[in-house]
Length: 482
Ligand code: ADP
Ligand code: ASP
Ligand code: MG
Image 1 (cartoon, rainbow, N blue to C red):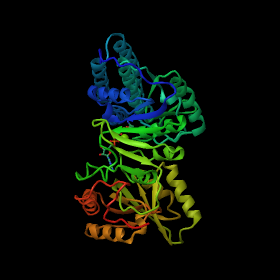
Image 2 (tube, rainbow, N blue to C red):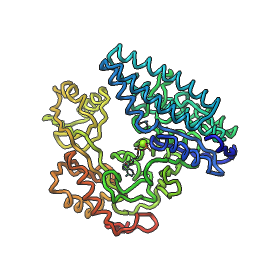
Image 3 (tube, rainbow, N blue to C red):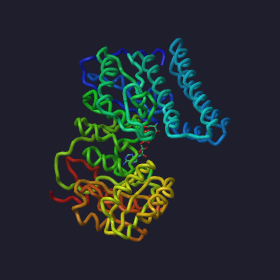
Image 4 (tube, rainbow, N blue to C red):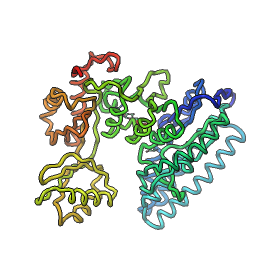
């Protein structure tokens, strides 16, 4: 970026905007140049920048950890060397002189630590969840240092902050939750003081640590959540999620090429969408934003002039029809039957055993002698079934997908449910669940039928002729007076 000097025009009294850039938005030097443009062209705000690891790096680190634990250290070290070369080449194209030398030194030290960690994993032949968090966090450490240096080179007063020193969590490795009071205080101290001096703080998303300093992560895709945690602690004006699509869409554009951008939606709808598998937002992101009433904008870093989606507190209680369709892929449906009946003691026992095995469950339904659950992985189910043997019979079916329609009050609209059923009835739909909230209708199908279900439903609820749905003038097929 030599020669592209931009004046730092951020003032300490401006309002704070937390800008999160996902993996594809920092994937190479062209993406990082776009990031610099996006950050520096904003006026009258104080940016706080949160970055994910470069696209693909977290998966590669995980794979390297698995190889090392299986005794294949050579292949693990080879893949982290490739990761090093990728960062080093980007640094080379964006930085000059001492800035390049300084970053290179920092990266080299981190990569040595990463190699030692992989050696430990190979020696112990185990990648436990504590070590896995330590390993995966390297991706965000590298990317955040790289982006800080690139912003500085472009004339921006950027300052790196280690997110692990200010986002403090419990010790649920792989899915840690923030300890809010200490986290808010530490963010206000570390990030707040940089903002006071009109710096642009840059943090790695996804990573955090326990109060004892042990590295944790917020779950896959967790950089969105980091942005919301920071925004809530700093009283930000808004959160911008910069990604590789034009906003939150009526469905995943990878599943259905007709998907269209939703211009405006409520926190509640977006939270349901994220919970039911829309990868565009990490499911925990909306809670802090909702609590502090901070609008979330989802924007495309490859098309920064686009309007994107704005997610705000809802106003109207009217039904506005189906706003989006999503699918939670590759889940297992668990049926638990208890001949003596399902009571609170049995439910308590069930949840305790699933929790003990870190097996996250979604409740699908309960009846007199039966509970239906949904889990993301079957790995722990044999042990769970053995532990519950004296209380209940546990069976499961693999390779299922939960297809979910989201929209304010759709559950109260009988016509929506009947149209859904009519559209997919021949696809061996197992359970049609009208969830606990009025905002969702979902059903289970075989994984191999997930895409077809979504495509059929999308054609029914978002026929091509329809304009993009907006709160200003909705013309959904299933609008109903409130
Ligand atoms: P990032 O690396 O920027 O965090 P992600 O891959 O985590 O990006 O999320 C963006 C992806 O989410 C899109 O490329 C898209 O395929 C997927 N996605 C799933 N559901 C939706 C949806 N309803 N609207 C937009 N994108 C969606
Ligand atoms: N890099 C992490 C992941 O791939 C976090 C994120 O991208 O938000 O899951
Ligand atoms: Mg993401």
